[in-house]
Every structure is written in C-alpha cells, then in structure tokens.
Amino acid sequence: MERYSFDSYKNKGFNFWTVTLPIDKLKWLDSMCKCPGFFEKFMSKHVIGMTIRLNYCKPPPAVTQVSIGKERRRVDR
Image (cartoon, rainbow, N blue to C red):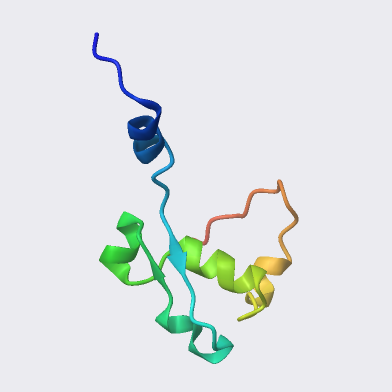
C-alpha cells in the first residue's frame, strides 16, 4: 500500500471547484466556474447560487414560493 504525504492529500482532497465572480455586479453573467457543467453550458448552479447569495441578481418568484423541503410538482409536457 502506497502512502501519500499530507501535501499530496491536501492537493487532491481539497481540490474544489472555484467560482470566479466579477467585481461589477452588472457583469455577473461573465462569472466562471471550474465544474464540468459550466464547460458544457457556460453557466452552472454554483454561479447562480453565488450571484443570488451576494445579491448580484434575484431569483424568479416561482423559485421563492416553494418552501424548503417540499418537492415541486413536475409539469407535463
């Protein structure tokens, strides 16, 4: 069994996705994330979550009306 140093564990274990937001709140669409979803769609839930949390943008009213812990109903298409 191969042993690793704490530094190598730290590099692998704490390698989280980083979200980069611009200082200007009006340019929040230029934000970046290092998660795989961002590279496919050029937008991620991490970017949206951080911009809402920092008041860069507001969530739509339909999202805020659902209470936490309650499941949403599916819309038939």
